[in-house]
Amino acid sequence: MPTLLIRAMVPDDIPAVSAVDHHCFALPWSAGAFAGELASPVAHYRVALLGDTVAGYLGGHVILDEAHVVTLGVHPQFRRRGIAEHLLVEFLETALGEGCRRLTLEVREGNIEARGLYEKYGFRPISRRRRYYTDNDEDAIVMWIEDTSRWGFRATFDERVQQLRKRTG
Ligand SMILES: CC(C)(COP(=O)(O)OP(=O)(O)OC[C@H]1O[C@@H](n2cnc3c(N)ncnc32)[C@H](O)[C@@H]1OP(=O)(O)O)[C@@H](O)C(=O)NCCC(=O)NCCS
Image 1 (cartoon, rainbow, N blue to C red):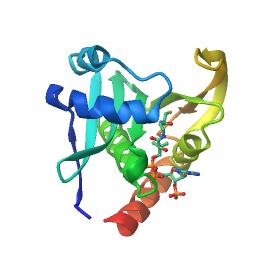
Image 2 (image 1 turned 135 degrees about the vertical axis):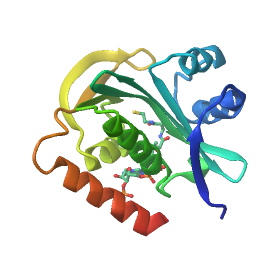
Image 3 (image 1 turned 90 degrees about the vertical axis):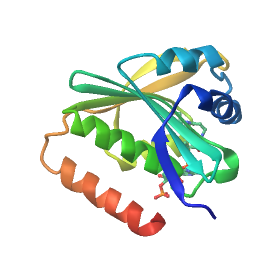
């Protein structure tokens, strides 16, 4: 099993990331949508590589003291190995390093896998966008970490990261 490497996504990664995206979402993005995101000054896009293979990706935005997880996907063949968790941790560490105090994302109500991951890192469901997803009219749950400076957040975050690195290297 090759070592996991996370690095910044570049335009040459778009075909491989799109292929993973098609395995992950009922409404996959176009290549142009990824290209537009990579050109944005607020965007942080990362790929998770196993050898030369793109196993997963994450996209996020950092604007002033707020960060937004925009997209995250792991190829079905490589799931349940901590790849999404490593991608999320890398993004959260970047956001915290840039001074973010509030972090948010939207997730399908029925997406138990992703909600479990986000809750593990302190995101909590705060509101709902009714019929947000047009393929099946599913609601979006809006999750927030509302204040990263609140007591206990950083200690719990660091503990989770330590456990992840101990478990997966
Ligand atoms: C959600 C997704 C990114 C998780 O990727 P992954 O690499 O398999 O996840 P990890 O192995 O890093 O798991 C991290 C945590 O996520 C949760 N999780 C992941 N898969 C799960 C499953 N099948 N059942 C329950 N919880 C799950 C758990 O909390 C897990 O922590 P644990 O290992 O301590 O139980 C992946 O299933 C995926 O790409 N799904 C389709 C796209 C998607 O839904 N993206 C999120 C959009 S908001």
